[in-house]
Image 1 (cartoon, rainbow, N blue to C red):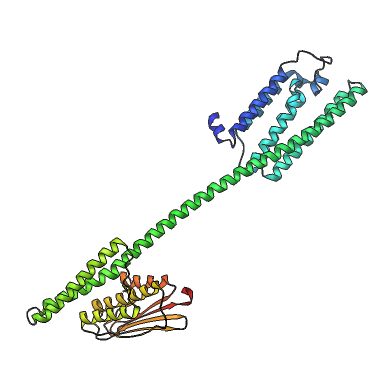
Image 2 (spheres, helix red, strand yellow):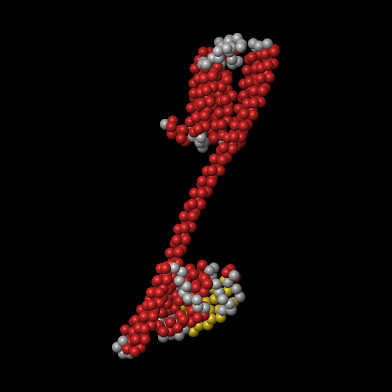
Length: 421
């Protein structure tokens, strides 16, 4: 594996560089002997090999300590993240390398505390808070044990005064080292918590961006459906009526020219209205079909147009106690308009009834004809029926169709008024 790739995968590459710089500087101070020695040069450090130079392992030093230090430094390139067993093995290996460097290396013994600090730092990337606390406590315990071991070794070759001084320095050094470990642990927890918060914030921002895109797409789709519904309800109705007027005029052109001219005049008016609808839909997409009329007058106008187109005068009854919101007026008008258009195109009816009543907290619209009817299970995919159903459901209402072949059709719309007041 390329070391540069490994460095990029490290959570904090700058911290890894800082570890190496710290190890390099401290290793140089350990390798380069000081110009002056206050004590006798042999043994120079209180280590196992310093006390027992005849041990077989001591002949491999200082190479073994250098290799341990290099391996410990390189282990920072790859930190285990997933497998808990690998994390434990990795940490145990680090501890063994630290003990090997500190106990058997005479000049490298002064590196001993810094390696524990690096161990605690790395454990913060590997474990959760309980594991970090355990590694920190274990590091401090091992430091105390090795310090006590050094004191026991030092006592064999020192006077009581030197032993007392060494004990005092060890106590102060242990206290300072413990506080350093706590500081490093708290600092790393704060840094990792901030990074975790940033990652969560970035994930939340990405989710919000995706939700915003979905909402935008949904809003665009709904607006397209609304525009299509408006064009279908307004322009489609006008063109359907215009076509009926022209067909009737063509049939009467030879037998009754004067009456055919009347139908042509009506067709011209419908064509003008269709053109006006197209212009207003393109310019504003918010064409008000009622044109500042009351709902009663608008429905009466629809009934009159239906009568002129089909020769059938709808029987309508309207009972509204108070004015309704514009969205309800528009929906009722469009549903009535679409229903009358469908009756003109498909029903072949001779009687049409329309009832609009307001009960307590509810508005009910019933449109019924005695035409040929249709099978509800097979003929509910038309855009007109979907448009009427969508308008009703958008207001929290209920839309029902009752029809059968040869039995006419009945459309019932119930819209609750309590939700809109």
